[in-house]
Image 1 (cartoon, helix red, strand yellow):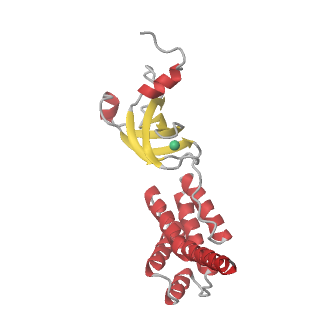
Image 2 (cartoon, protein in one colour; image 1 turned 135 degrees about the horizontal axis):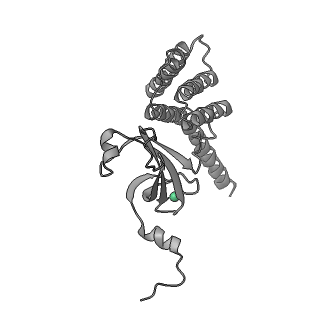
Length: 242
Ligand SMILES: [Zn+2]
């Protein structure tokens, strides 16, 4: 039977071609949910294939991968660096060791805090997140520490250094998990700026997430309670006016 004349070859390829599957958060803003993703295409972009004896041996192979989100069908382009050992260069059957993976398109969006958080806290957090996206992990560590410092300032801490500021807020009844999160961010920031320690991507990501949790407890939850109380008061007033 002849194939339908209405289907495009690209659509057919999308339907059938699947090299690998994974679960991830779709990076497209309009979608942004945890979904299945399908690897549609992978090509080696470095080193270029050559038969020349003068080509320097590559220690790293770089591949470009094209994934699609199963839900919105939008594409995601990533670059992946693989370690090339003597074994992996001899046979392609070996599973290569993935060294790094970078999202190229869509451009990774910076992390965002709720509009309930103070403006300066949100701005510093977004900038630290941009450094994180660009793999500037020391700068990201320093940036996230600055976010904690700004939160302390906004909460009215007056002590001289950050350790004392956090302790000051703790003595005023700030929940212990928030205090712990702030101290953790302080240590990572200090290591990044004073001790030349570079934290790994996942450690910086954890830090960003604990700060977001602290912001949730300090700003978002109280704002939600206030909004609910206001809504209750309005409903009550409307009922009385009847
Ligand atoms: Zn999607």
